[in-house]
Image 1: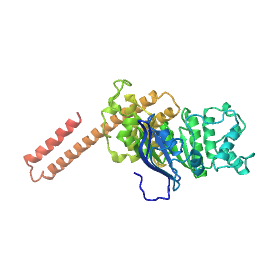
Image 2 (image 1 turned 90 degrees about the vertical axis):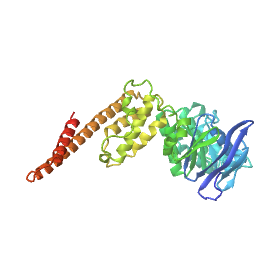
Image 3 (image 1 turned 60 degrees about the horizontal axis):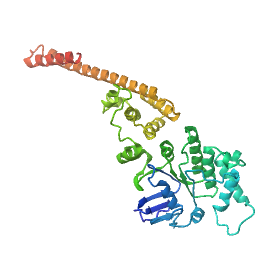
Image 4 (image 1 turned 180 degrees about the vertical axis):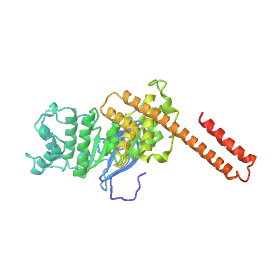
Length: 416
């Protein structure tokens, strides 16, 4: 249940929201809050109820039970135009526009009808509406397409047009439904830049549904994962990969422990080691974290079940490297993998490099461990000899001889 205590920072709250379609429960007793000025990312498998949640928030479908409050007022089961005028705008999975009209006309219609209720049909748009439309096109990078017919636009331009039309209504809350679905990495980055600009310059609160986890997690302050209409996870983006249920149900690491056929005979590098070896005090926490995350990523790749979310933790760690921190062999190999994944290049050579780096590091650390043992044996011999010499003038006992013998034997054993 949503906390009943009034919080002025909460812009949208859903309290035990349920939506039934006959016997099908599309949204089941869902409660969450969105604070003003934040970005909530919503993910989950197909059929989890994500778009249905948008439909009940925006009045496209009435809720079966529960309450929805926006900006301090109830909007439960209001009409879509009333909710839009209250300050909520949305985009859709599929292109939603007047295809035979121009880009600017589409956005002007949104500016005219989406902000206030016009009881009397006007012949002309007001200057304020034109300014809002022009501003929306500019922030979405569509100014040069203003007079183009919508049917001539490509996929990313269609998606940006939906965002521009929504922005032209001057919303407090923008709901986006898969804004980067079907886009290539370069286009995804372009949309992310537009959304970040909206957040910073228009003081807009955003809720976004997306399957592209790299986009969703990098943009969101909080993440809500749905499954069968229910809340599976609600928390920080960083906590996603640590939640076992989310990993099993949605992120796809449930088979991570099974080693696949890739790199046959080479999996032992990452499978046999469960703890970092060597003197951890000689390495920074950042280097240790990168190595642990990179080793987990390699496990995933070898298992044949690697997903975009698996790259995220490594990418975030690499991006967080302090200025004074030197890169390591592991971090350099991991960086090549992240770059290849972002550019959709073949990653096998990069993972092979990472595996070799781990192999080499283990050999070095095993050597350091053996050297440390030898040094320890040498120290033991030195102590025993000192004791022997100190007692030379006063005589020595069988115990002294035995200590010296044990130290020498231990040194021989460590040296093979």
